[in-house]
Image 1 (cartoon, rainbow, N blue to C red):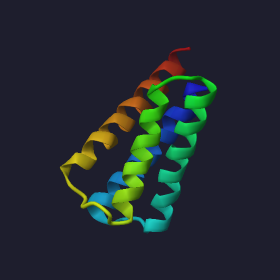
Image 2 (cartoon, rainbow, N blue to C red):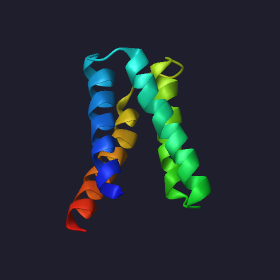
Image 3 (spheres, rainbow, N blue to C red):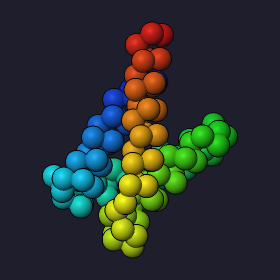
Length: 98
């Protein structure tokens, strides 16, 4: 299952980074990525009862708040992007090795 979610995280990270720092994508497309993170984080934290999935939800909420311009896009935005990139790479690596 991790081989499936790894590339999804990588695609989301690339899309969010390009939107936040280059304005490459429309806000509507990036909102769906943030909603996906919120939904997946909430669902997996309830089903698997892992607190690490709550970080996905919090990243999604933070991205949604930044997209809606409730807080400014600062260098702090790099922290959840780096976290999700690391998670995507490690999930892909573990999925390929299994």
